[in-house]
Amino acid sequence: MKLDFAPMEGITGRDFREVHAACFPGVDRYRLPFLSPAADRHLTPRQRRDLEAGPLGFARLLPQVLTKEPGDFLWAASALAELGYETVDLNLGCPSGTVVGKGKGAGLLRDPAALDRFLEAVFAAAPLPISVKTRIGLEDPAEWEALLPILARYPIRELTVHPRTRRELYRGGVHADAFLRAAATLPFPLYYNGNLFTPADVQGLDAACPGLAGAVIGRGLLADPALVTRCRGGVRSRAALIDFHEELAARYLRRMHPDGAVLPKFKELWMYLSLLLPDEKAWKRLRKCARWADFHPLALGLLRDGDLLPEADFFRIDQKSVNLMPAQSV
Ligand SMILES: Cc1cc2nc3c(=O)[nH]c(=O)nc-3n(C[C@H](O)[C@H](O)[C@H](O)COP(=O)(O)O)c2cc1C
Figure 1 (cartoon, helix red, strand yellow):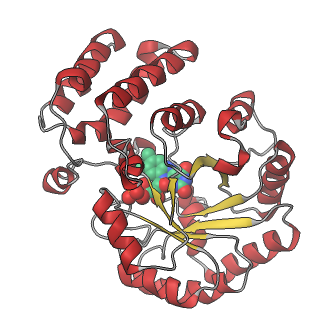
Figure 2 (tube, rainbow, N blue to C red):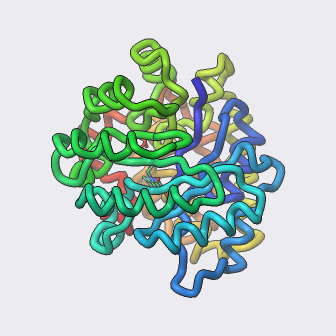
Figure 3 (cartoon, helix red, strand yellow):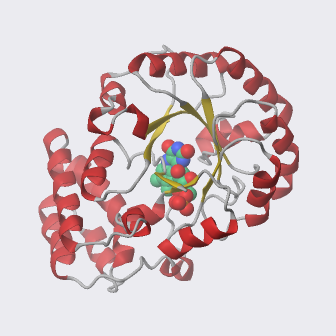
């Protein structure tokens, strides 16, 4: 079973992907955060930089497009093909209020007939094979029954299912039954996504769905960057964690302001990484830091000298309702 790093807007940019791959072997593909085509159909210099394949190469990267306009999707797909990409992913899952309000992301699931028309238009003219990442509905898991036959009509290269509705955001359990319905009825390679936090979770999925093409892991890999390395039989070394942390910081600091940009980026990362520490108060101390110069030695000290749990403690989140949604998506 293939194991991909999930696309995570604001987190898994090019520096993050390259540093992660260098420190933690085993991830098959890194999925790029969504590209939202601008009205002028132009890639900014920042987008171009993030889209360069770099040492990973195009085969280990999957770019994604977020739009409800077939013309914009096709423009983005052509731009990606020109750059060298082999497949383009369509986002049918983003739950952000602004995105859904504009009918994009999970908003495209609201009207199955309109989704059908969108898919017909993009599959008729796509310059690249299209893969799809979707939720199972907007409000109610029962919507999945109407969406399945529509998806089945198109030659989707790979389908990734996050078995939650938009209303459920990233909280609570997943609808395993909805995923199994997809596995039983859809003809194309299927990827599972959602709540894989330990190697045992990944093994359990593999055992429950032997024909699965793969799994896509997001928060589990942020909390334990060695999760896939461990799934492949490797170990999580403290040295690799420190190298990852320090190389990522060095790369960000080359391009971004320490307090204005690097600090918030590291705080978002540590919201997950701190689940690896038995000391639940560590995150509170980190969150309070107002300057990178205060944050960095504290964070590095925790990685160097602090105890590390065998598995990231996601249970803590359910217990205390810590919101792990990105700020812009609430
Ligand atoms: C901060 C953040 C950013 C995300 N950005 C994207 C994105 O750009 N494209 C996408 O398809 N999903 C995005 N997602 C969803 C993840 O790819 C994934 O589906 C979700 O985290 C559930 O998987 P997990 O339980 O393994 O974390 C994002 C999620 C989070 C928390």
